[in-house]
Length: 368
Image (cartoon, rainbow, N blue to C red; front, side, top):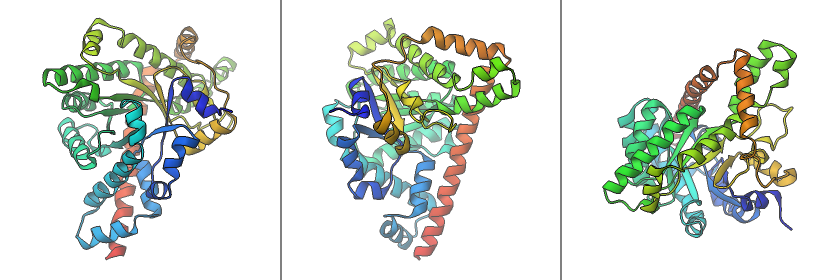
Protein backbone atom coordinates (compact mmCIF):
# COMPACT_ATOMS: atom_id res chain seq x y z
CA UNK A 1 0.00 0.00 0.00
CA UNK A 2 1.43 3.35 -1.03
CA UNK A 3 1.76 6.33 1.31
CA UNK A 4 1.20 10.04 0.56
CA UNK A 5 4.92 10.81 0.19
CA UNK A 6 5.38 7.92 -2.24
CA UNK A 7 2.34 9.20 -4.13
CA UNK A 8 3.84 12.69 -4.22
CA UNK A 9 7.04 11.30 -5.71
CA UNK A 10 5.04 9.23 -8.21
CA UNK A 11 3.26 12.44 -9.28
CA UNK A 12 6.58 14.02 -10.24
CA UNK A 13 7.62 15.90 -7.09
CA UNK A 14 11.11 15.27 -5.72
CA UNK A 15 11.05 15.24 -1.91
CA UNK A 16 14.12 16.84 -0.38
CA UNK A 17 14.65 17.11 3.37
CA UNK A 18 15.35 20.64 4.62
CA UNK A 19 17.64 19.57 7.45
CA UNK A 20 21.01 17.96 8.15
CA UNK A 21 23.03 17.03 11.21
CA UNK A 22 25.88 14.67 11.96
CA UNK A 23 23.68 12.67 14.30
CA UNK A 24 21.17 12.18 11.49
CA UNK A 25 24.00 11.01 9.20
CA UNK A 26 25.82 8.71 11.62
CA UNK A 27 22.72 7.11 13.14
CA UNK A 28 21.59 5.85 9.73
CA UNK A 29 18.37 7.86 10.00
CA UNK A 30 19.14 9.93 6.89
CA UNK A 31 19.69 6.81 4.80
CA UNK A 32 16.51 5.27 6.20
CA UNK A 33 14.45 8.24 5.00
CA UNK A 34 15.27 7.33 1.38
CA UNK A 35 13.22 4.16 1.60
CA UNK A 36 10.67 5.04 4.29
CA UNK A 37 9.84 8.61 3.22
CA UNK A 38 10.85 8.73 -0.48
CA UNK A 39 13.43 11.41 0.33
CA UNK A 40 15.69 12.03 -2.65
CA UNK A 41 17.82 14.99 -1.56
CA UNK A 42 18.83 17.37 1.23
CA UNK A 43 19.04 21.14 1.54
CA UNK A 44 20.95 23.05 4.19
CA UNK A 45 21.33 26.70 5.16
CA UNK A 46 23.06 28.66 7.93
CA UNK A 47 20.01 28.36 10.20
CA UNK A 48 20.06 24.56 9.94
CA UNK A 49 23.78 24.32 10.68
CA UNK A 50 23.50 26.83 13.54
CA UNK A 51 20.89 24.55 15.09
CA UNK A 52 22.68 21.24 14.59
CA UNK A 53 26.19 22.43 15.50
CA UNK A 54 24.83 24.56 18.35
CA UNK A 55 23.45 21.39 19.96
CA UNK A 56 26.91 19.86 19.59
CA UNK A 57 25.67 16.36 18.92
CA UNK A 58 28.33 14.31 17.11
CA UNK A 59 30.76 17.19 16.56
CA UNK A 60 32.97 16.85 19.66
CA UNK A 61 35.91 14.96 18.21
CA UNK A 62 36.18 17.12 15.10
CA UNK A 63 35.88 20.31 17.12
CA UNK A 64 38.64 19.10 19.45
CA UNK A 65 40.92 18.32 16.49
CA UNK A 66 40.22 21.70 14.93
CA UNK A 67 40.85 23.49 18.24
CA UNK A 68 44.17 21.66 18.61
CA UNK A 69 45.12 22.75 15.09
CA UNK A 70 44.37 26.38 15.98
CA UNK A 71 41.47 26.74 13.54
CA UNK A 72 39.43 29.93 13.54
CA UNK A 73 35.64 29.72 13.80
CA UNK A 74 35.31 30.39 10.06
CA UNK A 75 37.81 27.65 9.21
CA UNK A 76 36.07 25.25 11.59
CA UNK A 77 32.64 25.97 10.08
CA UNK A 78 34.05 25.32 6.60
CA UNK A 79 35.53 21.96 7.68
CA UNK A 80 32.51 20.82 9.71
CA UNK A 81 29.79 21.73 7.21
CA UNK A 82 31.61 20.40 4.15
CA UNK A 83 32.21 17.09 5.94
CA UNK A 84 28.50 16.75 6.74
CA UNK A 85 27.56 17.59 3.16
CA UNK A 86 30.14 15.21 1.65
CA UNK A 87 28.93 12.38 3.91
CA UNK A 88 25.31 13.10 2.97
CA UNK A 89 26.30 13.13 -0.72
CA UNK A 90 27.73 9.63 -0.25
CA UNK A 91 24.48 8.45 1.32
CA UNK A 92 22.53 9.77 -1.68
CA UNK A 93 24.99 8.53 -4.32
CA UNK A 94 22.65 5.71 -5.35
CA UNK A 95 19.71 8.07 -5.77
CA UNK A 96 21.94 10.41 -7.77
CA UNK A 97 22.98 7.60 -10.12
CA UNK A 98 19.50 6.15 -10.59
CA UNK A 99 17.95 9.56 -11.28
CA UNK A 100 20.72 10.51 -13.73
CA UNK A 101 21.73 13.46 -11.58
CA UNK A 102 18.37 15.11 -11.06
CA UNK A 103 18.06 13.90 -7.48
CA UNK A 104 20.40 12.59 -4.81
CA UNK A 105 21.48 16.20 -4.36
CA UNK A 106 22.82 17.85 -1.20
CA UNK A 107 23.01 21.65 -1.08
CA UNK A 108 25.45 23.84 0.82
CA UNK A 109 25.19 27.63 0.90
CA UNK A 110 27.81 30.30 0.40
CA UNK A 111 28.25 32.57 3.41
CA UNK A 112 25.18 34.86 3.48
CA UNK A 113 27.27 37.95 4.17
CA UNK A 114 28.57 37.63 0.59
CA UNK A 115 25.07 37.95 -0.92
CA UNK A 116 25.84 41.34 -2.49
CA UNK A 117 29.41 40.54 -3.59
CA UNK A 118 29.56 38.69 -6.91
CA UNK A 119 33.29 37.94 -6.96
CA UNK A 120 33.44 36.68 -3.36
CA UNK A 121 30.36 34.50 -3.94
CA UNK A 122 31.96 32.90 -7.01
CA UNK A 123 35.23 32.30 -5.16
CA UNK A 124 33.53 30.64 -2.20
CA UNK A 125 31.20 28.60 -4.42
CA UNK A 126 34.25 27.10 -6.14
CA UNK A 127 35.99 26.50 -2.78
CA UNK A 128 32.93 24.68 -1.38
CA UNK A 129 32.57 22.59 -4.54
CA UNK A 130 36.25 21.59 -4.47
CA UNK A 131 36.21 20.79 -0.75
CA UNK A 132 33.04 18.65 -0.80
CA UNK A 133 34.42 16.98 -3.95
CA UNK A 134 31.23 15.11 -4.86
CA UNK A 135 29.38 15.26 -8.16
CA UNK A 136 26.02 15.44 -6.40
CA UNK A 137 26.70 18.56 -4.34
CA UNK A 138 24.81 21.74 -5.22
CA UNK A 139 26.10 25.15 -4.21
CA UNK A 140 23.41 27.52 -2.93
CA UNK A 141 23.64 31.10 -4.18
CA UNK A 142 21.03 33.73 -3.24
CA UNK A 143 19.01 35.38 -6.02
CA UNK A 144 20.17 38.89 -5.19
CA UNK A 145 21.25 41.20 -8.02
CA UNK A 146 24.88 40.35 -7.27
CA UNK A 147 23.92 36.70 -7.02
CA UNK A 148 22.59 36.64 -10.59
CA UNK A 149 26.02 37.31 -12.11
CA UNK A 150 27.56 34.77 -9.73
CA UNK A 151 25.03 32.12 -10.81
CA UNK A 152 26.02 32.60 -14.45
CA UNK A 153 29.74 32.36 -13.68
CA UNK A 154 29.46 29.32 -11.40
CA UNK A 155 27.22 27.43 -13.84
CA UNK A 156 29.64 28.37 -16.65
CA UNK A 157 32.42 26.62 -14.75
CA UNK A 158 30.41 23.38 -14.68
CA UNK A 159 29.19 23.53 -11.07
CA UNK A 160 25.58 22.68 -10.20
CA UNK A 161 23.71 25.47 -8.39
CA UNK A 162 20.71 25.76 -6.10
CA UNK A 163 19.48 29.35 -6.44
CA UNK A 164 17.89 30.39 -3.16
CA UNK A 165 15.75 33.21 -1.73
CA UNK A 166 13.52 33.82 -4.76
CA UNK A 167 10.28 35.66 -3.97
CA UNK A 168 9.14 37.51 -7.09
CA UNK A 169 8.17 36.28 -10.54
CA UNK A 170 10.33 38.94 -12.19
CA UNK A 171 13.40 37.90 -10.21
CA UNK A 172 12.66 34.27 -11.09
CA UNK A 173 12.74 35.16 -14.80
CA UNK A 174 16.10 36.85 -14.19
CA UNK A 175 17.36 33.71 -12.41
CA UNK A 176 16.39 31.52 -15.36
CA UNK A 177 18.10 33.98 -17.73
CA UNK A 178 21.25 33.82 -15.57
CA UNK A 179 21.13 30.02 -15.68
CA UNK A 180 20.69 29.92 -19.46
CA UNK A 181 23.59 32.36 -19.89
CA UNK A 182 25.76 30.14 -17.70
CA UNK A 183 24.81 27.04 -19.69
CA UNK A 184 25.65 28.80 -22.96
CA UNK A 185 29.08 29.74 -21.57
CA UNK A 186 29.60 26.20 -20.25
CA UNK A 187 28.82 24.87 -23.72
CA UNK A 188 31.31 27.26 -25.31
CA UNK A 189 33.93 26.13 -22.79
CA UNK A 190 33.37 22.49 -23.72
CA UNK A 191 31.74 21.31 -20.48
CA UNK A 192 29.46 18.26 -20.53
CA UNK A 193 26.11 20.03 -20.14
CA UNK A 194 24.34 16.85 -19.04
CA UNK A 195 26.38 16.97 -15.81
CA UNK A 196 25.24 20.48 -14.84
CA UNK A 197 22.01 20.72 -12.87
CA UNK A 198 20.21 23.55 -11.13
CA UNK A 199 17.12 24.24 -9.07
CA UNK A 200 15.50 27.61 -8.38
CA UNK A 201 14.21 27.84 -4.81
CA UNK A 202 10.99 29.83 -4.60
CA UNK A 203 10.12 30.69 -1.00
CA UNK A 204 6.47 30.08 -0.18
CA UNK A 205 5.22 30.57 3.39
CA UNK A 206 6.93 33.91 4.01
CA UNK A 207 4.82 35.48 1.24
CA UNK A 208 1.63 34.63 3.14
CA UNK A 209 3.10 35.82 6.44
CA UNK A 210 3.86 39.29 5.05
CA UNK A 211 0.81 39.74 2.83
CA UNK A 212 -1.62 38.37 5.46
CA UNK A 213 -0.27 40.95 7.92
CA UNK A 214 -1.08 43.67 5.38
CA UNK A 215 -4.52 42.23 4.64
CA UNK A 216 -5.34 42.34 8.35
CA UNK A 217 -4.25 45.98 8.38
CA UNK A 218 -6.65 46.73 5.48
CA UNK A 219 -9.29 45.34 7.80
CA UNK A 220 -12.21 44.77 5.43
CA UNK A 221 -14.15 41.55 5.08
CA UNK A 222 -12.94 41.24 1.48
CA UNK A 223 -9.33 41.62 2.62
CA UNK A 224 -9.73 38.98 5.33
CA UNK A 225 -11.18 36.62 2.73
CA UNK A 226 -7.90 36.82 0.76
CA UNK A 227 -5.71 35.64 3.64
CA UNK A 228 -3.43 32.64 3.02
CA UNK A 229 -3.97 32.71 -0.73
CA UNK A 230 -1.06 34.81 -1.99
CA UNK A 231 1.77 32.31 -1.40
CA UNK A 232 0.13 29.50 -3.35
CA UNK A 233 -0.84 31.90 -6.13
CA UNK A 234 2.73 33.19 -6.36
CA UNK A 235 4.23 29.69 -6.34
CA UNK A 236 1.81 28.44 -8.98
CA UNK A 237 2.62 31.35 -11.26
CA UNK A 238 6.32 30.61 -10.74
CA UNK A 239 5.66 27.19 -12.24
CA UNK A 240 3.98 28.87 -15.21
CA UNK A 241 7.14 30.96 -15.66
CA UNK A 242 9.17 27.71 -15.60
CA UNK A 243 6.97 26.24 -18.34
CA UNK A 244 7.22 29.39 -20.46
CA UNK A 245 10.97 30.00 -20.12
CA UNK A 246 11.97 26.43 -20.93
CA UNK A 247 9.72 26.28 -24.00
CA UNK A 248 11.72 28.74 -26.10
CA UNK A 249 13.95 28.51 -29.16
CA UNK A 250 17.07 29.53 -27.25
CA UNK A 251 16.48 26.80 -24.70
CA UNK A 252 15.70 24.16 -27.34
CA UNK A 253 19.17 24.72 -28.81
CA UNK A 254 20.85 24.27 -25.43
CA UNK A 255 18.68 21.25 -24.60
CA UNK A 256 19.71 19.60 -27.88
CA UNK A 257 23.32 19.93 -26.67
CA UNK A 258 22.41 18.02 -23.49
CA UNK A 259 21.42 20.83 -21.12
CA UNK A 260 19.02 20.14 -18.25
CA UNK A 261 16.13 22.40 -17.30
CA UNK A 262 16.56 24.35 -14.11
CA UNK A 263 13.78 22.83 -12.01
CA UNK A 264 11.59 24.94 -9.73
CA UNK A 265 11.95 24.11 -6.03
CA UNK A 266 9.36 25.04 -3.42
CA UNK A 267 11.10 26.08 -0.21
CA UNK A 268 9.86 27.42 3.11
CA UNK A 269 6.96 24.97 2.90
CA UNK A 270 6.29 24.61 6.61
CA UNK A 271 3.19 26.63 7.49
CA UNK A 272 3.74 29.61 9.82
CA UNK A 273 0.04 30.11 10.65
CA UNK A 274 -1.28 27.33 12.95
CA UNK A 275 -4.78 27.91 11.56
CA UNK A 276 -3.66 26.48 8.20
CA UNK A 277 -3.38 22.84 7.21
CA UNK A 278 0.14 21.63 8.02
CA UNK A 279 0.38 20.05 4.56
CA UNK A 280 -0.90 23.10 2.63
CA UNK A 281 2.30 24.13 0.86
CA UNK A 282 3.00 20.56 -0.25
CA UNK A 283 -0.30 19.06 -1.37
CA UNK A 284 -1.39 22.30 -3.06
CA UNK A 285 1.86 22.48 -5.05
CA UNK A 286 2.01 19.26 -7.07
CA UNK A 287 3.24 19.11 -10.66
CA UNK A 288 5.88 17.23 -12.68
CA UNK A 289 9.56 18.27 -12.53
CA UNK A 290 9.04 20.05 -9.22
CA UNK A 291 11.12 19.79 -6.04
CA UNK A 292 9.67 20.42 -2.58
CA UNK A 293 12.15 20.77 0.26
CA UNK A 294 10.43 20.17 3.59
CA UNK A 295 11.29 20.48 7.24
CA UNK A 296 10.92 17.05 8.87
CA UNK A 297 7.77 18.13 10.73
CA UNK A 298 6.04 19.01 7.44
CA UNK A 299 7.28 15.84 5.76
CA UNK A 300 5.89 13.71 8.59
CA UNK A 301 2.55 15.54 8.42
CA UNK A 302 2.26 14.73 4.71
CA UNK A 303 3.23 11.12 5.37
CA UNK A 304 0.63 10.85 8.12
CA UNK A 305 -2.42 12.54 6.59
CA UNK A 306 -1.56 14.28 3.32
CA UNK A 307 -4.06 14.00 0.48
CA UNK A 308 -2.00 14.22 -2.69
CA UNK A 309 -3.68 15.26 -5.96
CA UNK A 310 -2.34 14.39 -9.40
CA UNK A 311 -1.70 18.07 -10.09
CA UNK A 312 -2.61 21.19 -8.10
CA UNK A 313 -0.75 23.83 -10.10
CA UNK A 314 -1.22 23.92 -13.87
CA UNK A 315 -5.03 24.06 -13.80
CA UNK A 316 -5.01 27.04 -11.43
CA UNK A 317 -3.09 29.77 -13.25
CA UNK A 318 -6.07 32.05 -13.90
CA UNK A 319 -7.24 31.69 -10.31
CA UNK A 320 -3.72 32.54 -9.12
CA UNK A 321 -3.54 35.65 -11.31
CA UNK A 322 -6.90 36.81 -9.94
CA UNK A 323 -5.67 36.38 -6.36
CA UNK A 324 -2.60 38.57 -6.91
CA UNK A 325 -4.65 41.13 -8.88
CA UNK A 326 -7.27 41.34 -6.12
CA UNK A 327 -4.64 41.81 -3.41
CA UNK A 328 -2.92 44.48 -5.49
CA UNK A 329 -6.22 46.31 -5.93
CA UNK A 330 -6.45 46.52 -2.12
CA UNK A 331 -3.33 48.67 -2.10
CA UNK A 332 -0.83 45.95 -1.23
CA UNK A 333 2.26 46.28 -3.43
CA UNK A 334 3.59 42.93 -4.69
CA UNK A 335 6.93 44.50 -5.62
CA UNK A 336 7.29 46.13 -2.22
CA UNK A 337 6.51 42.85 -0.43
CA UNK A 338 8.89 40.71 -2.48
CA UNK A 339 11.72 43.28 -2.25
CA UNK A 340 11.28 43.39 1.52
CA UNK A 341 11.24 39.59 1.80
CA UNK A 342 14.48 39.24 -0.15
CA UNK A 343 16.25 41.76 2.08
CA UNK A 344 14.84 40.12 5.23
CA UNK A 345 15.79 36.66 3.93
CA UNK A 346 19.43 37.65 3.49
CA UNK A 347 19.44 39.37 6.90
CA UNK A 348 17.92 36.34 8.66
CA UNK A 349 20.61 34.07 7.23
CA UNK A 350 23.32 36.55 8.30
CA UNK A 351 21.91 36.50 11.85
CA UNK A 352 21.95 32.68 11.79
CA UNK A 353 25.50 32.72 10.42
CA UNK A 354 26.62 34.98 13.27
CA UNK A 355 24.95 32.62 15.76
CA UNK A 356 26.79 29.73 14.12
CA UNK A 357 30.12 31.56 14.38
CA UNK A 358 29.48 32.34 18.06
CA UNK A 359 28.56 28.74 18.93
CA UNK A 360 31.58 27.34 17.09
CA UNK A 361 33.91 29.88 18.74
CA UNK A 362 32.55 28.80 22.13
CA UNK A 363 32.98 25.12 21.26
CA UNK A 364 36.58 25.69 20.10
CA UNK A 365 37.40 27.54 23.33
CA UNK A 366 35.83 24.78 25.43
CA UNK A 367 37.86 22.14 23.58
CA UNK A 368 41.22 23.81 24.25
